Length: 480
Image (cartoon, rainbow, N blue to C red):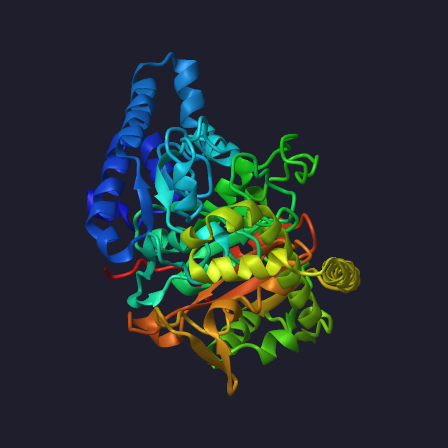
């Protein structure tokens, strides 16, 4: 393959090519760096490109493959992500650079001394880190219109947002800059960019993957996870990152449960239902059509409501504001002028919330978790839109949802927050209007959330794989 061809390749295809000697890790990384150089002036997905580190790592892999004893070479070739370039949201620690977390305040901190644990685990699986990705300041936003580092632009239409807060993570994939990225999801920050950029994203169960070496936002909600252009790549990355770590107090001490072996099981035996109520009332026509298309593809006819969703969304807002405000209170007192105005004002409001309100939000959260647990006694998977609409224009202050005008920035995550509140695993699959799949048009995707009970990432990835297999969910490369 030529360098240009690799921009559309999956992570699994890249690893297979290196394994078979059809390409080298150095060639893959070189092609990736060339693609970033050619496209990132438009997309603005990267804040740090680590060319020297990436090429050194790739050359080291190639040398080991060529020179190692037979046993060692065989072990290297067995690595699931051998030679695959990837990038991480800039709240993941990367040795030698400052962990920006989307802020200029953090630039006064020393560079990280070591990589975040999930970055290390991907590299142990053979992957090669090529850079850090743009994001909303302190992960507080749904649009990645970062005033410090510039907005991330949607590769499918550069006048539109990429979503947030992991906007760089979604855009870099859609632009073909890398085949695999890492993001974080507190209230929807993996799922929203996946929906708007037309890629696949996995928000694991709260506590499934360790957050060691990442900049926090809301300790009781934060989740880390992968984004990719295929479900197989999601599963490869997810499986490589599993495992307990005692340094994260929220990390569950449970054995790894690989998802990749289950992808070919399809939806056999799974009970699937479509969420209505809050999830239909707050979705525009294209989002509702996307869910309907997915439901038809899966033969899902059952409809359910979660009456507590509105209260759960409010609880997630209160908990997030309060924890985020408390975390940043010292800087809010001394460096308020260095925050983005919107982030600053919301964090200040959170720091001033009455404790009684936050306590009540936690009670609502617990009640909603119990309600949803009862639902999962009779259903295995729930379907819901991921965002109310496809990507809005950069700078748009309002959007219309079913005749009601709402603020864009907080309400882009209106459909993801109730699920965040109770930490369920979710895979977002990208669904395009039929015309866009027949032949590329200016039409844009919108994602569908596949939601399961805690620890059932295998269920959501099985359904996602079935939808990808039948063509209902696709992640085409943007035409830049």
